[in-house]
Amino acid sequence: MFDKLTDDLQPGDVLARTVFDAGGQPLLKAGTALKPSYITRLRHRGYVTVTVEDGLADDVAPETLVSEQLRHTIAGHVGGFFGQMGDIARERGRGQGGVDEAVEDLGEQPLPLADRGREALEQLYADVQSLINEIVGSDTVAGLESLKTHNEYTFQHSVDVAVIGTLLGSRMGLSGGRLRELALGCLLHDLGKLYIDEAILDKPGKLSAEEFEAVKAHPRMGYELIRRMPVASLLPAHVAYQHHEQQRGTGYPNGLVGDNRIGPRLHEERMGAGKMLLIAEIGAVADVHSAVSSDRPYRRAMPPDVAADLIEGMAGKHLNREIVELFTRIVPRFPVGRWVEVLGGEFSGARGVVTELHVLRMDRPNVRVLIDADGERRAAPAELDLRTHEHVQLRSLDRHEQPTR
Image 1 (cartoon, rainbow, N blue to C red):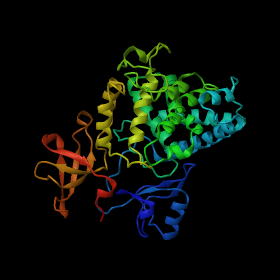
Image 2 (cartoon, one colour):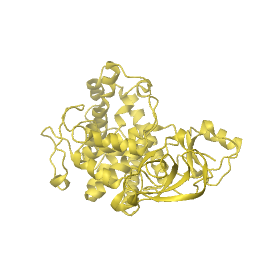
Image 3 (cartoon, rainbow, N blue to C red):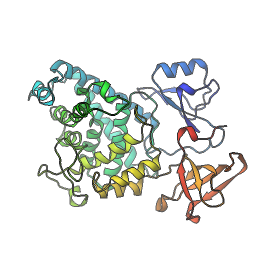
Image 4 (tube, helix red, strand yellow):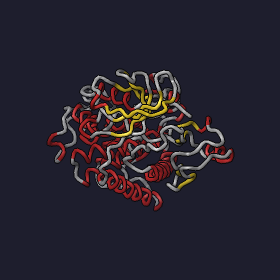
């Protein structure tokens, strides 16, 4: 199976994964042979990618940490909540004179959430608990790739950040209450982008200095919005406020610093003193991973091994070193179902699919070799256990490199 742009779909392509709508309901089920009307319907609804059968490794189903149905359900709820907050932002003024004016327009009173708004926030708390239940209750070793099916990037990105943040927080042993606040903060961390011109957010080229200053306002605006909501604590607001701060103090908006540790902060932590909060440092790692793993107008998504290399290179100066170390221990560089090229050994240059992961050697998976180095399909696939081939390395194949039948 492989991911295919809806613009490239052909009648007769067979779905390998069920496509869900914004409410988490099945739109087209796995195994459906696509008709022209189905393809048109997918494009009109804003779907940009689906997973189709490739006739080579369709029996290798990628393991998922969180069901696609739950992802889509939460993304729909986040989108609805952002829409309601956008209405409030328009009513209060978007602060054309800058972030200070925007904050002044908000006033110091709680946000005037109508019944629908309060119910939407309660729904997000329920979604957070469902997310935690799936992650904590799973013993699956799974990659963090999620199929970016829809053009609503912000909402899917928010869910991805919450998934990664919850996974990291749960493996650290955060208490249930702090885990819920972390997950909610991750879902809402980009809420302040409601105050940024969409033309800037979607600009394909490099931002001007003025445009980048506008972008740098969104963490504070997210904080100011969330702290005026009926939330259980200020922690979600600080996830939004601090997710672009850096360990060495060169982030924004306040130049906070980190100490590259997890340690006793798991149980008690004070706000202030110019330092990042642990849950914000978790959110920062999750935000970077999701951002670089997604297609954006200005670049393609990075394969998981390339994304892992980038994150490891940011440890210490940008991202909390101990959180990154935990991330690399629990997130596979080559998830099950990933097409890879074999580098070295008797199969060097051949291509295959990752079929199994090993908890104690996450970097040495099993690979089913399907395509020879000359590009020909093997009559009999070869099974390669990298634990017994230490000199062999792998490289993830990009979408356009993946073999098809």
